[in-house]
Amino acid sequence: MVVVMNPGAPPEHLAAVVARIESAGAQAFVSRGMDRTIVGVIGEGSRMAELTLAGMPGVATVLRVTEPYKLVNRQARTERSVVWVGSGGREVPVGPGTFTLIAGPCAVESAAQTLGAARLAAGAGATLLRGGAYKPRTFPAGFQGLGKDGLRILADVREATGLHVVTEVIDPADVDLVASYADMLQIGAANMQNYPLLDSVGRQDKPVLLKRGLQASVDEWLMAAEYLAQRGNCEIVLCERGIRTFETATSATLDLASIPLVQRLSHLPVVVDPTHAAGRRDLIVPLARAAIAAGADGLLIDVHPDPENALVDGAQALAGAELRELATAVRRLPPMLGRRAA
Ligand code: PEP
Image (cartoon, rainbow, N blue to C red):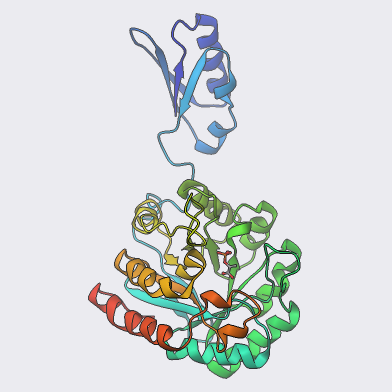
């Protein structure tokens, strides 16, 4: 960390800054320039963050020179991680070298609809089944999910199809219940910075799919992952799902640059959800192709056996011709980039 003092900051302000740094057990290196004095700080990062040097008299700015996330940082583990999902000797890898398709209905509506969607997903090459039993909705009157009944349906469909279940948890109080049915817990975009939820999910041992918040910078997303890791759960897959920009023609703007960027900054796998970024069926396959080309470790795609009558987000669910196109892209493109199907 580097503290830049204001031009002409009096010596007592500098002395107070140095004293505060040293009182935290860190070292302060003062360097006096023509106009400004800067103080280099060497010490343990999380304690440095508590120093609140930025508000002290005479301080112009405080600059970080290392990332605040440590456990998920690529520097902590130079090899990229593989996260395994499922159990019973049929675990599915998510990470480098492989390509994983996670697909299924946006919401679990009924046993028949979920089984139908799961069969479509498996036919397209999916090994992980997504489906929401708890649906956080923008509109309070919208379908909120079947709750525990939805979890039971997902478990039955896993039994029938062999697909492992990825499902969202939205309430810290439900984490144990959802983890008892799911193979992987999803934290949705709206909850990326729900710290009680991160705390609770970080203390259980199922792998986690952490979606990027709509307003989250890459650093904030990785800090949310660090939260989980610090609670003991480092089995995290990041999911880029688009961020809010001035563009309103799509639900969100898919940040393709975040894929290689995050793979440089962190060892965690990164999958991409073009469905919730586009919000419209016709853009999903082109965005999926772009995500594969940019190096994504997998895709998360909504499929539905009857999109026209879906209770949630039917306009973005794939079926028919578009799903066949997606299946072709998932079969052909990853091997060209040295990845095999997971
Ligand atoms: C979802 O995947 O079901 C979902 C609602 O996505 P997000 O949290 O990215 O909006």
